Each structure stands twice: as C-alpha cells, then as structure tokens.
Image (cartoon, rainbow, N blue to C red):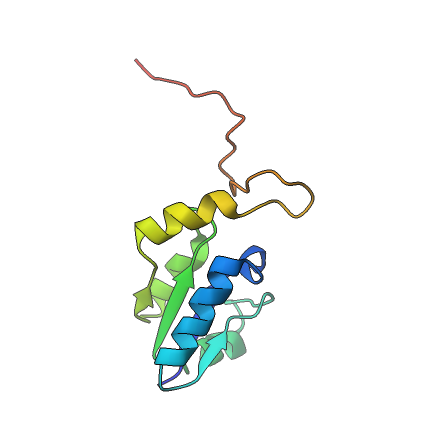
Length: 116
C-alpha cells in the first residue's frame, strides 16, 4: 500500500533528505505521498487522509516531535531512520533566517544546569 513520508519543511530541500526520498521511492513498489506542511489532526478529513496509508516514514528535524505521538495514536506503523542517519542529518539542519544549526525547542545557548 501507500506510504506517507513525513518531514518538516526545513528538510524538504536538504540534500540528505532528498537522496533518502529518491531512494525510498525507487525501492517502494507503491505510491509514496508527502505529508503536507499544513495539516490539522483535529479535522476528520486529515485523519481520513492519514489512514489511507499503510505506514509512515518519519524523518524528524530534532529529537522530540508531537506529530510522532499523533502517528502512534492512530495506529500506523512508524519507520524512523537510524540514530546514525539522524546524527549526521541534524547538525546540517539550519534556521531559515540564519546559518545557525536548528535545535528545535532545544536551545544550545542555554547553559547546562546540573542538579545535585
């Protein structure tokens, strides 16, 4: 059946993700659809569209994404790249408005605090 490829708009043109996308589409014998950048899982039409897929291939742009929980909640199998792949990818993801590494809601400028 159909696969859903879910990734953030920051990754749409990343060379690593483009190569991953092309490789996935070349080996998967059925259609691979992209999760659009504008969706709302509180709307039934979006849930129905999601459930038309056999599974989700999810490429997160940082370690924690709520959308993972949404995919899990509807019972779709979720495939995520290996930690090795993500460890190479994440440092390459950049903010739209700067060349800084994108940390999502993790901000590397916040000093580390150790609880004792």
